[in-house]
Length: 132
Image (cartoon, rainbow, N blue to C red; front, side, top):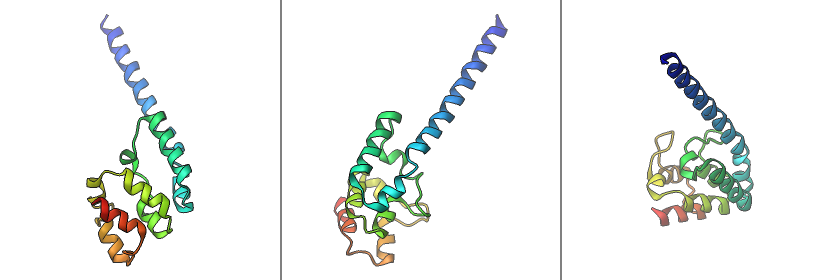
């Protein structure tokens, strides 16, 4: 009886571990070309991508935003440098304001980075300042 319980627990744990790994691979595949979408300023395609990730994996933008890097930059930074105004303003609107104020991977907030780069005149910067 005890062997059956132990075996059942081991099988259940290994099944959960495998399904989580498979789901992580699926999310990576689903978000594979998001940097290209941001750089191309394709707002419609980005909306479709965000909707599909939310419906398939129950993840919102704030859940996977920090895990995505486009040439070492976050999605909003990529939008600012690519002059992708429509996508950048959409990303700023979809992110919670407290996450927009938080330091990113390099320790700088979005506002500090924009000021450092001299991009305060960007419409994305204006949207960001309006949200914060």
